[in-house]
Length: 255
Image (cartoon, rainbow, N blue to C red; front, side):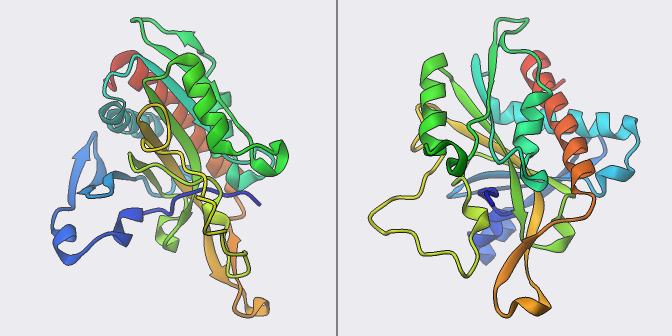
Protein backbone atom coordinates (compact mmCIF):
# COMPACT_ATOMS: atom_id res chain seq x y z
CA UNK A 1 0.00 0.00 0.00
CA UNK A 2 1.19 3.49 -0.85
CA UNK A 3 0.62 5.78 2.06
CA UNK A 4 1.88 9.22 2.69
CA UNK A 5 5.00 10.90 3.40
CA UNK A 6 5.08 12.88 6.54
CA UNK A 7 4.02 11.96 10.05
CA UNK A 8 1.59 14.19 11.87
CA UNK A 9 3.32 16.60 14.28
CA UNK A 10 6.53 16.00 12.36
CA UNK A 11 8.29 18.98 13.84
CA UNK A 12 8.57 17.21 17.21
CA UNK A 13 11.22 15.00 15.60
CA UNK A 14 13.43 18.05 15.20
CA UNK A 15 12.51 19.77 18.43
CA UNK A 16 15.04 20.39 21.18
CA UNK A 17 14.01 21.86 24.53
CA UNK A 18 14.95 25.26 23.08
CA UNK A 19 12.87 24.59 19.93
CA UNK A 20 9.81 23.72 21.99
CA UNK A 21 10.00 27.12 23.65
CA UNK A 22 9.50 28.66 20.19
CA UNK A 23 6.26 26.79 19.54
CA UNK A 24 3.19 28.97 19.89
CA UNK A 25 -0.56 28.42 19.98
CA UNK A 26 -2.99 30.98 18.63
CA UNK A 27 -6.67 31.03 17.67
CA UNK A 28 -8.32 31.95 14.40
CA UNK A 29 -12.08 32.09 14.02
CA UNK A 30 -12.31 30.10 17.27
CA UNK A 31 -9.93 27.29 16.18
CA UNK A 32 -6.63 26.54 17.92
CA UNK A 33 -3.53 26.47 15.72
CA UNK A 34 -0.08 25.32 16.80
CA UNK A 35 2.79 27.04 15.00
CA UNK A 36 6.46 26.19 14.98
CA UNK A 37 9.33 27.65 12.98
CA UNK A 38 12.42 25.43 13.06
CA UNK A 39 15.49 25.03 10.93
CA UNK A 40 13.67 22.39 8.85
CA UNK A 41 10.81 24.76 8.04
CA UNK A 42 7.48 26.10 9.24
CA UNK A 43 4.63 23.99 10.59
CA UNK A 44 1.00 24.88 11.26
CA UNK A 45 -1.18 22.29 12.97
CA UNK A 46 -4.89 23.09 12.98
CA UNK A 47 -6.66 21.29 15.85
CA UNK A 48 -10.10 20.31 14.57
CA UNK A 49 -11.20 17.41 16.75
CA UNK A 50 -13.72 14.90 15.42
CA UNK A 51 -14.72 16.37 12.06
CA UNK A 52 -17.69 14.00 11.75
CA UNK A 53 -19.40 15.68 14.70
CA UNK A 54 -19.05 19.21 13.32
CA UNK A 55 -22.07 20.97 11.93
CA UNK A 56 -21.94 22.43 8.39
CA UNK A 57 -21.44 25.87 9.92
CA UNK A 58 -18.44 24.71 11.94
CA UNK A 59 -16.93 22.96 8.92
CA UNK A 60 -17.23 26.21 6.98
CA UNK A 61 -15.48 28.02 9.82
CA UNK A 62 -12.79 25.32 9.87
CA UNK A 63 -12.30 25.82 6.13
CA UNK A 64 -11.84 29.56 6.65
CA UNK A 65 -9.05 28.94 9.15
CA UNK A 66 -7.40 26.40 6.85
CA UNK A 67 -7.59 28.97 4.03
CA UNK A 68 -5.99 31.56 6.28
CA UNK A 69 -3.06 29.19 6.89
CA UNK A 70 -2.71 28.20 3.23
CA UNK A 71 -2.73 31.84 2.16
CA UNK A 72 0.35 32.48 4.26
CA UNK A 73 2.22 29.64 2.54
CA UNK A 74 1.02 30.39 -1.01
CA UNK A 75 2.16 33.97 -0.54
CA UNK A 76 0.19 35.35 -3.47
CA UNK A 77 1.63 32.91 -6.04
CA UNK A 78 0.18 33.65 -9.48
CA UNK A 79 0.15 30.03 -10.71
CA UNK A 80 -0.37 27.12 -8.31
CA UNK A 81 -0.22 23.39 -9.06
CA UNK A 82 -2.47 21.41 -6.70
CA UNK A 83 -1.10 17.86 -6.48
CA UNK A 84 -3.38 15.17 -5.11
CA UNK A 85 -0.93 12.53 -3.91
CA UNK A 86 -1.75 8.98 -2.90
CA UNK A 87 -3.62 5.93 -4.14
CA UNK A 88 -7.20 6.74 -5.05
CA UNK A 89 -8.14 3.06 -4.74
CA UNK A 90 -7.27 2.91 -1.02
CA UNK A 91 -9.74 4.68 1.25
CA UNK A 92 -7.28 6.00 3.82
CA UNK A 93 -4.85 7.16 1.13
CA UNK A 94 -7.18 9.03 -1.22
CA UNK A 95 -7.35 12.38 0.59
CA UNK A 96 -5.30 14.16 -2.07
CA UNK A 97 -7.08 12.55 -4.99
CA UNK A 98 -10.54 13.26 -3.53
CA UNK A 99 -9.64 16.86 -2.74
CA UNK A 100 -8.56 17.45 -6.34
CA UNK A 101 -11.77 15.87 -7.63
CA UNK A 102 -13.72 18.54 -5.74
CA UNK A 103 -11.80 21.39 -7.38
CA UNK A 104 -13.71 21.98 -10.59
CA UNK A 105 -11.89 25.22 -11.46
CA UNK A 106 -8.77 24.70 -13.56
CA UNK A 107 -6.86 27.37 -15.44
CA UNK A 108 -7.52 31.08 -15.07
CA UNK A 109 -9.35 32.24 -11.95
CA UNK A 110 -11.05 35.57 -11.26
CA UNK A 111 -8.37 38.04 -10.27
CA UNK A 112 -5.77 36.81 -12.73
CA UNK A 113 -4.37 33.84 -10.82
CA UNK A 114 -4.23 30.34 -12.29
CA UNK A 115 -4.66 26.96 -10.65
CA UNK A 116 -4.30 23.45 -12.02
CA UNK A 117 -4.95 20.09 -10.37
CA UNK A 118 -2.81 17.00 -10.97
CA UNK A 119 -3.00 13.49 -9.51
CA UNK A 120 0.21 11.59 -10.40
CA UNK A 121 -0.95 8.26 -8.97
CA UNK A 122 1.49 5.89 -7.31
CA UNK A 123 4.64 4.39 -8.74
CA UNK A 124 3.33 0.85 -8.31
CA UNK A 125 0.61 1.69 -10.85
CA UNK A 126 2.35 4.10 -13.21
CA UNK A 127 5.88 2.73 -13.16
CA UNK A 128 7.13 6.32 -12.95
CA UNK A 129 8.54 8.18 -9.92
CA UNK A 130 5.94 10.48 -8.40
CA UNK A 131 8.42 13.29 -7.86
CA UNK A 132 9.42 13.21 -11.54
CA UNK A 133 5.81 13.50 -12.67
CA UNK A 134 5.12 16.39 -10.29
CA UNK A 135 8.23 18.26 -11.44
CA UNK A 136 7.27 17.81 -15.09
CA UNK A 137 3.73 19.09 -14.46
CA UNK A 138 5.04 22.13 -12.55
CA UNK A 139 7.44 22.97 -15.36
CA UNK A 140 4.71 22.53 -17.98
CA UNK A 141 2.44 25.16 -16.43
CA UNK A 142 5.28 27.38 -15.10
CA UNK A 143 3.99 27.02 -11.55
CA UNK A 144 5.04 29.49 -8.86
CA UNK A 145 3.95 27.14 -6.07
CA UNK A 146 3.19 23.45 -5.68
CA UNK A 147 0.55 22.58 -3.09
CA UNK A 148 0.76 18.86 -2.34
CA UNK A 149 -2.22 17.29 -0.57
CA UNK A 150 -1.57 13.91 1.07
CA UNK A 151 -2.79 11.55 3.76
CA UNK A 152 -0.44 11.39 6.75
CA UNK A 153 0.64 8.81 9.30
CA UNK A 154 -0.20 9.92 12.84
CA UNK A 155 2.40 9.93 15.60
CA UNK A 156 -0.30 9.52 18.25
CA UNK A 157 -3.85 8.21 18.39
CA UNK A 158 -5.05 11.62 19.53
CA UNK A 159 -3.99 13.13 16.20
CA UNK A 160 -5.64 10.46 14.03
CA UNK A 161 -8.08 12.27 11.70
CA UNK A 162 -8.33 15.24 14.08
CA UNK A 163 -5.68 17.68 12.81
CA UNK A 164 -4.65 19.37 9.60
CA UNK A 165 -0.95 20.06 9.17
CA UNK A 166 0.58 22.48 6.71
CA UNK A 167 4.32 22.89 6.19
CA UNK A 168 6.92 24.05 3.71
CA UNK A 169 9.41 21.25 4.44
CA UNK A 170 8.29 19.03 1.55
CA UNK A 171 7.64 15.29 1.65
CA UNK A 172 8.77 11.89 0.42
CA UNK A 173 5.90 10.03 -1.30
CA UNK A 174 5.18 6.63 0.23
CA UNK A 175 7.59 6.88 3.16
CA UNK A 176 4.71 6.58 5.62
CA UNK A 177 4.15 2.99 4.48
CA UNK A 178 7.52 1.77 5.73
CA UNK A 179 7.28 -1.05 8.30
CA UNK A 180 9.97 -3.05 10.02
CA UNK A 181 9.77 -5.60 7.23
CA UNK A 182 10.32 -3.04 4.44
CA UNK A 183 13.73 -3.41 2.74
CA UNK A 184 16.20 -0.64 3.39
CA UNK A 185 16.49 2.00 0.68
CA UNK A 186 19.53 1.60 -1.56
CA UNK A 187 21.99 4.19 -0.17
CA UNK A 188 23.10 4.96 -3.72
CA UNK A 189 19.56 5.91 -4.74
CA UNK A 190 18.14 9.04 -3.08
CA UNK A 191 14.49 8.69 -1.99
CA UNK A 192 11.93 10.55 -4.11
CA UNK A 193 11.34 13.97 -2.63
CA UNK A 194 8.81 16.67 -3.38
CA UNK A 195 10.31 19.77 -1.82
CA UNK A 196 11.55 23.22 -2.66
CA UNK A 197 15.01 21.70 -2.99
CA UNK A 198 14.02 19.24 -5.72
CA UNK A 199 11.11 20.94 -7.51
CA UNK A 200 11.21 23.89 -9.94
CA UNK A 201 9.33 26.11 -7.46
CA UNK A 202 8.56 26.30 -3.71
CA UNK A 203 6.48 23.46 -2.26
CA UNK A 204 3.70 23.61 0.34
CA UNK A 205 2.20 20.44 1.78
CA UNK A 206 -1.09 19.95 3.60
CA UNK A 207 -2.43 16.73 5.02
CA UNK A 208 -4.50 14.91 7.60
CA UNK A 209 -3.29 11.80 9.46
CA UNK A 210 -5.58 8.95 8.40
CA UNK A 211 -3.45 5.98 9.49
CA UNK A 212 -1.27 5.09 12.46
CA UNK A 213 1.43 2.48 12.99
CA UNK A 214 0.70 -0.15 15.60
CA UNK A 215 1.74 -3.64 16.65
CA UNK A 216 -1.04 -6.22 16.43
CA UNK A 217 -1.20 -9.10 18.97
CA UNK A 218 -0.87 -11.75 16.25
CA UNK A 219 1.75 -9.83 14.28
CA UNK A 220 4.80 -10.36 16.44
CA UNK A 221 7.10 -7.35 16.38
CA UNK A 222 5.92 -6.13 12.99
CA UNK A 223 4.22 -2.74 13.02
CA UNK A 224 1.22 -2.34 10.74
CA UNK A 225 -0.62 0.65 9.35
CA UNK A 226 -4.22 0.74 10.55
CA UNK A 227 -7.05 3.19 10.11
CA UNK A 228 -10.50 3.79 11.55
CA UNK A 229 -13.63 2.00 10.40
CA UNK A 230 -15.17 5.28 9.24
CA UNK A 231 -12.14 6.42 7.23
CA UNK A 232 -14.28 6.85 4.12
CA UNK A 233 -16.49 9.45 5.81
CA UNK A 234 -13.53 11.18 7.42
CA UNK A 235 -11.66 11.48 4.12
CA UNK A 236 -14.77 12.79 2.38
CA UNK A 237 -15.30 15.43 5.07
CA UNK A 238 -11.70 16.58 5.15
CA UNK A 239 -11.43 16.67 1.36
CA UNK A 240 -14.46 18.98 1.25
CA UNK A 241 -12.91 21.26 3.88
CA UNK A 242 -9.57 21.31 2.05
CA UNK A 243 -11.09 21.96 -1.37
CA UNK A 244 -13.11 24.85 0.02
CA UNK A 245 -10.03 26.23 1.80
CA UNK A 246 -7.92 26.06 -1.36
CA UNK A 247 -10.53 27.91 -3.41
CA UNK A 248 -10.94 30.53 -0.70
CA UNK A 249 -7.17 31.00 -0.47
CA UNK A 250 -6.84 31.33 -4.25
CA UNK A 251 -9.90 33.52 -4.87
CA UNK A 252 -10.06 35.77 -1.80
CA UNK A 253 -6.69 35.48 -0.12
CA UNK A 254 -8.15 33.48 2.75
CA UNK A 255 -10.75 36.06 3.71
